[in-house]
Amino acid sequence: METKWTIKDFNLGNTKGEGKFGKVFMATHKLTGSLYAIKKIPKQIIKSHMLESQLALEIKLQSFLNHPNILRLYGFFDDYENIYL
Image 1 (cartoon, rainbow, N blue to C red):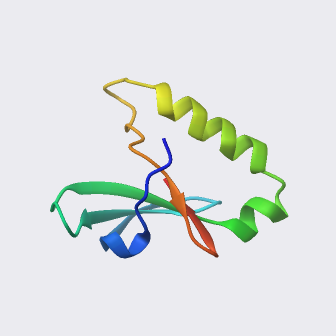
Image 2 (image 1 turned 180 degrees about the vertical axis):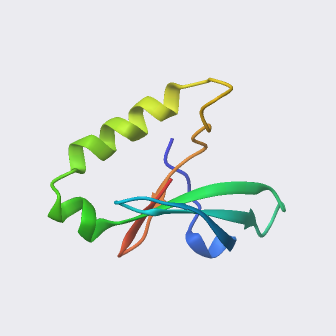
């Protein structure tokens, strides 16, 4: 499900939530104008807390979930510093 998007494909808006491991932003896809919620997780936090396998499991589970009360995962991508869901 990994996409060919990069963070440069989006205009990030307001922060909608913040947790221990990352922030969620409203974002608009520049090409289509579609709205998304993007979760930005710094790689350094994942490494320092040894959460690589937990993040991989979260991506795998969310890839298959289809529930009205859970946001759908449309894809994920990364850059040098962050992972984006």
